[in-house]
Length: 459
Image 1 (cartoon, one colour):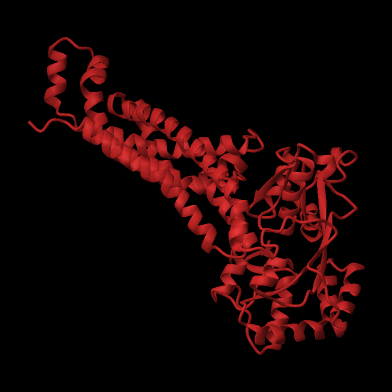
Image 2: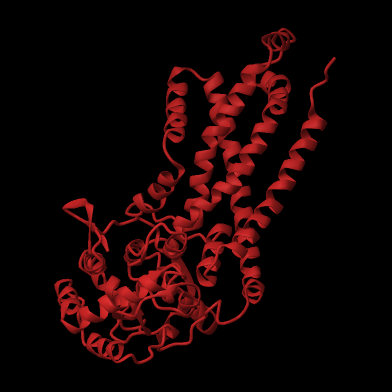
């Protein structure tokens, strides 16, 4: 489902029509709740919605943790590559060492994880099913693996890529309900079966140009009550796989630790740049003339007045036609530019807090303005700025989670992948919190020690 281009407040799509059909048959009025794809299961489980319908895939984990409906649509996982590469990239094996994108928390992502082990390709996880195809055309990706429904829809609006004919795997769409909501699930199942019998579902799929020869066979099996396997056509990396949460944790913990390392590296580099830029901006605003102060002040207000998430999107996607920044570089620049504005305000206020008498005394002794800044004003301002600067470092460490929208797999993004595949946020969330605490508490302790060491004398 997606927003109607002519009426952005209205949702359209075959899943929207199926939801309306189910609601009408139950004597209800459909009300749609907007939730990120990766969080649909958790949202339904906690009662935000009665049923989730948005290309929800039938997986072993979902069957174990939720109450899925009977399958109502058969889909194929297909590779999309740039048209110029269609002859040499036909299978996952052909993509060894290449970057392949998909929507996070899907069967396709699990296939890519298995492909990383077997073929050495690099999986790239996205928050939506739109940007993988734009990045493919721009050259940031070498291929995209997603449902043929999504691939066909994107090909209508984005040119420059080709869809492979042979599917990598096949699967089915289901509705998903809370684990204990079996009575409603039984009612929805019967509505779907009746829609298969009387041709209503076929009519919906034909209107949206997604009906194909795979659907009659699926309908026949559902109506006959035949067992339907969640996924066919490939060996999947299934984190639940019938194992305990402890076993899944043991296998995912190394990935979480590596992602924590990326978070630390990104945060340290971004903070170093932010401190450098912040000092330059603060010095320019304190010592510069009007022509210097005006643009620096405008920059600070622009950055502080707009969300960091928007700034990251502009850097990575908005400037892509002119400058194609790698995801990590865009994340680093975005965080650094954002925090430089806040750091500059800390340093500016610290510089202006140094008593004027001390500055005049330095000038009386014959010191130049640069020497006054370096020997008198700067060191005292540093003492004043240390505590808030460290607080900003801890805040940046946590704000680095936002860079996952740029496909950087840092700690929070890896935790989301773990939780989606496990079917629960309890253990992954606890591990993520523990790792963030392990990174932030030493920073706070270091700040307190430096404050004590550099504390200005009281007498």
